[in-house]
Image 1: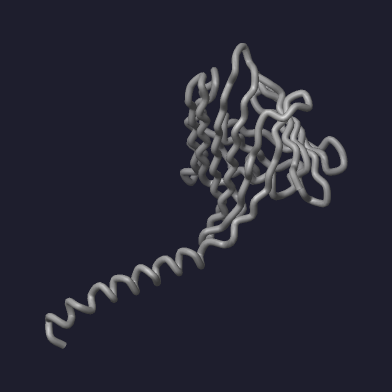
Image 2 (image 1 turned 30 degrees about the vertical axis):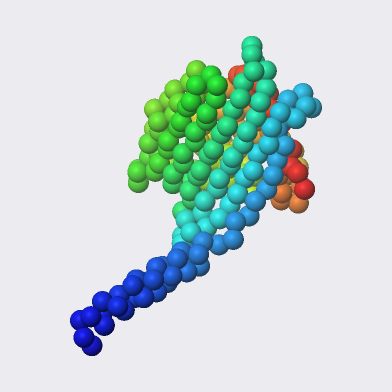
Length: 208
């Protein structure tokens, strides 16, 4: 083949390579599973949350995105995104960020092979203490799978770990930073979360 002909064919080879790459990327990512929740305070809707689950190669991704507006000595607008990654059934990395009209905050957690390295910052709270021992649970995974009593739960926002407790049939509790949170399941699906918070107590209700 003449050099001039080879030059002509290069763009086609490049296009074919890109199409092949993107087809592999699409094949490696399974279809996303999405669940919607309504966020309430005292029975009144203040926002919405979408949580999704998908897999890329061996890593399972959980993503929660929420937007709320409520009153706390003035109007508070909050947009929050939490992205957690799992490998072989254990949390290996998470990034949680919140943008508000009171300030922006972010928390990072990752497993370094021996411990979770923590850099957590939220409203009037900071934590850099490491967490030892792998965790099966975090706030984003529990939307898709029913919690298991006695297993470790790690908060992506606070970087604090606790043990899952069972309060009754399909009802569980975790305690993070002194706040007790309760989770209600039906046929293995999360229906409601009652979350204590230093600012407000929130309720998350599943939307079918």
